[in-house]
Length: 175
Image (cartoon, rainbow, N blue to C red; front, side, top):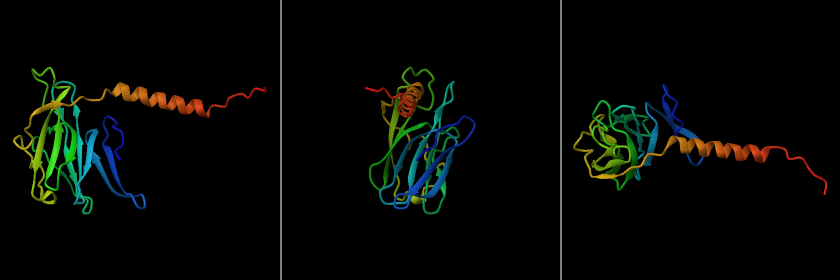
C-alpha cells in the first residue's frame, strides 16, 4: 500500500501480512510511487518511483526492499535516477521496467512515451546499490502515458460528493 505524495515529504509504502493484516515493513520514498511488484519466490518488492522536475529531468528511483531483513536498496546508478512508471517480474531472474526518458530535451513525446528494459540478475537478493547503469536500463521506446493528476482529483471529489450525498439526511415526505 503506497501513501499519497506530499511535496517536501517522503511517500510511505507499507507492506502488510495478509493473514493477520500486521505491518511487516515501512519504506519511505523521496518520490511519488508509480509501480510495485512482488517477487514470485523471494521476499522482495520492487518499487518504482519518480517525478518530472518541471523543467528538464524525469528523476526517480527503483527501490528493492528485502522484506525479511528490512534492507532497502536503491538500484539506479545515476544520481538523478529515472522516473519508473511500471514494473513486472517476468520470472525469478528478470524484471521488466518501464521508465520515462531521462529528460525531455528535444523530445516532443517524452511525456507520453517511455523506455522498456528487462533487467536480468541471477540473485536479486545480492544486487548492490546503484548497480543498474544506462546499459541495464536501455530499451526500446514504448507508450507510457502519465495519468493527469487533475483527473484523479476530479474522481476523488466526485466520490466524496456521492458519499456526502448518500449520508445527507433526506426529509421524509408523507405519501
